[in-house]
Length: 132
Image 1 (tube, rainbow, N blue to C red):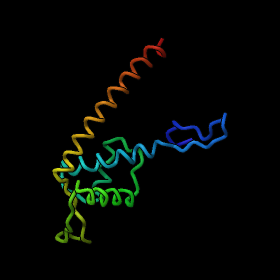
Image 2 (cartoon, rainbow, N blue to C red; image 1 turned 90 degrees about the vertical axis):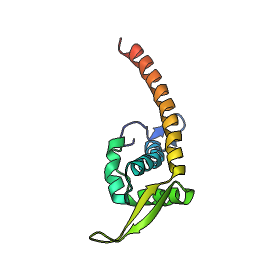
Image 3 (tube, helix red, strand yellow; image 1 turned 180 degrees about the vertical axis):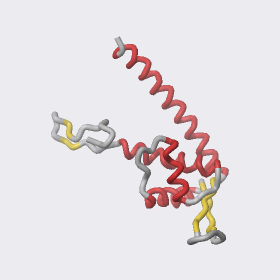
Image 4 (cartoon, helix red, strand yellow; image 1 turned 90 degrees about the horizontal axis):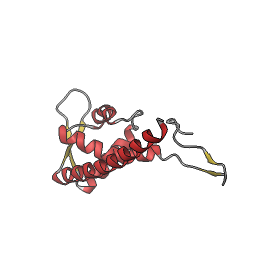
């Protein structure tokens, strides 16, 4: 069972192990969250990681995952980066969202609204049936 108790370890009928999809879902949600944070403020990886909790990440992704996503998003043209060597300490790669990234954020918002509507409909029926 996963840490969130939402996945069972085995399907008893088939004896097949079920892979927890919770982490996959949150990893998929990581990119739009990073993009939105970068829309608010150009930033670097560790600062972005610190700000992810506001999106419901109980456990923050490891830095390697965040940086891999940032590199992928840069290759896709959704963010740009440059080295900041002006501050104290080591140089930091500062990421900034592009116009293409902003378009993607808008698309994600539409998809998230649709998902939210579906989840709300589920919860209305659930509460009606289970709160008797």
